[in-house]
Length: 436
Image (cartoon, rainbow, N blue to C red; front, side, top):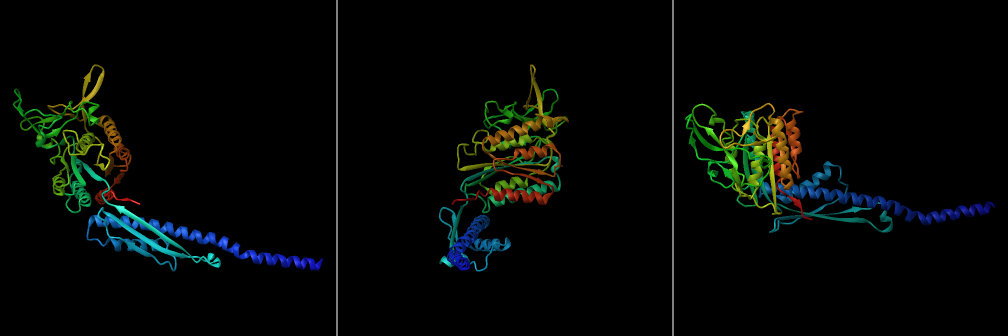
């Protein structure tokens, strides 16, 4: 029995000796393979980030050594995140930018095995590639910017600088390539569409006149009112025209000095100088009616009169964007009109289309929300910025809910944050995407 037992132990040892190599190879192979998969995933993420960063820098400055940007980004990414492995040698190949604007890069490396080498498998070869296209879609961007009195002083100066920075990002070479067009819609109580639009289709603007009783001179300074609800939140049916606002230019009554923003709308254009000049001309005056700015921002993006520079909504190769910024709640609302038991709102051709009441927000906030919804239903991207608006303010929630279709909401507390918000929006609008 003792000899039998001894023989059994020997057999077990022999069997174990035979099996230990494949067992170690199998269990160790799982570890080796896991390291290889992890390395490939890390390199793929690093390469994607590197090529996007390089294309962004190249878009801002075509003299950028984008190949070195890619190499530096990948190496730095691996080091900063503790992803580098001892002995991991990277071969980074960056092609010249193709005629179609495509930038390609590829990374190759090998991960040595610790366990599979026992069975003759010494390394995993890893090969990852990525490519980006800039300008895959054309851009039409309208800046709908608050020019009300509360934006006075340093705030309007910060807005001018921030908006100009965004335009610099979108049009680094001065524009003119027809792929990126930008428009400007300053707003307060009203929107100034410019005197040159007086006879445009879809508008109701009477000739200047002198009142037969008061003797006051009524003139049109470019200010526009609101159409009847629900047309005031839609971009259709311009047989029902948008009314112009006639202002008293002398004598008693309404002063022309606060009629609407001094800076008129700048239509969609690829001429950078036109946009930057319009931004520089912005000044702060008047009260706040956000739906007016939004409605005209939407019209500027349209191909329907009174503004026709936008491409049709059916053009899938163009991304339409509204950037809406305000620093306060609605303090004006359209005047009421009554038909039977129905209360509605209308902008008048003569006099004001806006009423100043403590309950203005109760009327204008729902109009703002409905406009945001209707615009997003047209697949237009909306970015919103709340500038120095206190927490708990309903308009902050309104702006947050308005953003959509890929657009973001920014809650900024000072001029530095405002500048950063506009820069972030500009970079995201470079419309860079992975093509493979």
